[in-house]
Image: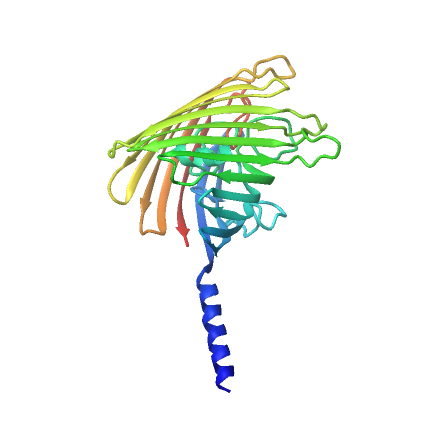
Length: 354
């Protein structure tokens, strides 16, 4: 009997130790706002989910495997708060579904995740992936990559890689960092079709930060023609305390004639401990030749926003963006417009994180 009690006690202690070394977290973002939009088709008023940041539900977990090695997973589903539907169509975990290992060597994860370019802009762009451009954020028409079945044009509706392997360096490299992504095209008989590659390089020290992103994305159009989009992006910012200015430049091209250059000047200004002002000016030059022989056209955008934290988890926000387009330009970032129409967007809402 004593042996039985001793065995049970040892097993209980061992089990408690194992569970203490593992954790699973349930988290999410609930974000919804009102929007007024004018893009050449008449004025539209709507309730939009995920204006400041995409609404989502997620699970993430980690297990300590010993000797500094950990097992990790993330499962994340996008939610459209305005109607309760998934924001990724039929995908159950369309925002992120990865599993991997981390340790002194860094982290390796496999599955479905944001592209390296999307992660790059989340870090540098003052509006990141929210506030303006129909809730897609990104102060321009930057190419952010990701699997697509349409012709190779810039679009913030993409931004996620499937069938991918990610490697991230540890945080012990004296301010230097790198993130690499390889996405298998998984096309029988053609290893290059649909294949993607992304790379982020960065350095950060004493308020100064500089970064570089490269992506090559062999997306295919409806005729299964590989477009081989390439983009190079550089960004630099410096946090002065009273303001954090940033400069971003990207050059994008592909095998079917796309040629776009975009730069953004932006700034984040803390107003007090709870509030901050965001502002950007973006100039886009699109030299892509349209089927008609005309040049696609350029655009300029000015955007300003304000965020006020009611608590660590809940904040209010408002933003306004105006875009002036050339005659042949038909959209900027996440907003589709009539050709040459000026775009005006006003949004305000509330976000809760848990």
